[in-house]
Length: 471
Image (cartoon, rainbow, N blue to C red; front, side):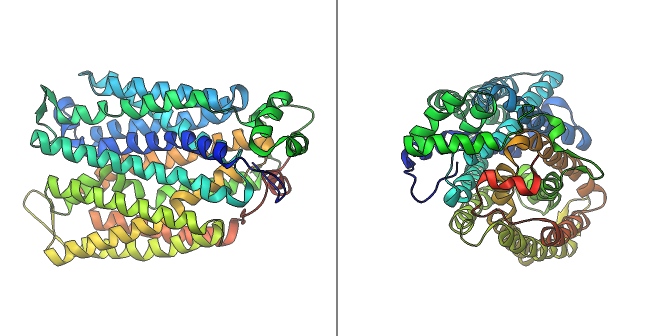
């Protein structure tokens, strides 16, 4: 939420709201990362080939696409907070069913529903934070979302590692239940925390104004910024909405170009964040390193290292995003990812295939690949990881924020699904090196796209976004 230098900001309340909202990011990351150590269990339990594994893993992402689209629209109708509560419930139920069912169809259905929760949290948490945060620190507060996503991923990697160690491997038993099942059941704990914590935060004041509940918005804004500023802010927010209709999906359209320029810009960062292949490391990290010739234990250890490196990189972003801006970070990230992905491609291309078709690498090449992969993860999490969510949460005018998030969230998760679904077959078919060449090319293209099409949103009030994509 915007604030002038004279406004009294209740940072304790803002901090509490951000802390609760970003638990959705933690669940987003945990649900995404939990599958990383369950590949062998899924194959064994449901007799899956590579395509079947890709579909089973990717069913979460299909749900994410649907959840992101529906959440963006439903949040304009029912409110940000209510839809996040619904997402928390879906998180919880999805975790319990995935951890217990022996029916593949039921597993996929509830993985899809869990994905809807992930998709909803992915778009609503940063949007909600941007709608209550002071403009001067909005970037770093919204960046907490990415810290929590990576924390969730890393927590999943750590839990998976220790469960596999305790059971001997992911197929071993703990209390009569396979370890890979416990990897799904463990997701229920943060889901319950999220559900309870959501009861203690207010609804977004921008949603309240847009839905004609100005008195309630005034109360929330008074708690956030004091009574003197609250009335002025309600008037500013009200002026940013269309006077003849409430927010609707058609608000994203524009004659001649189909979509408003701001929505096209959102689609660029949403899609290319996935085309650089980051979730291959997050979802298939264990499989990736096995293809590179390491053991399951070593693969799970490397996942944890990547996660810890990612968290550290996100803190760098928090320190820089409100100082140097969003666009410079994206440009730095695109350049760094291009170089590091290219190095990974080269290292993989120097390996050899054994009789079973698995990639074998000597110790030196393996070290180069690991270093390049972690440098790539650093550049992603200093730039495209958090900055995309920051920009999607703040770049759209109030009138079309929900609808634009619906469109861009759908595209983002659709691209995510395409990458994750295609990776197993591409890696085993055309080869790991050739697959990474495609991700390298996407990173290079993203550099040009950012430079040519994206604006800078640093320090702008949300109501100032009207001139670029307003009604």
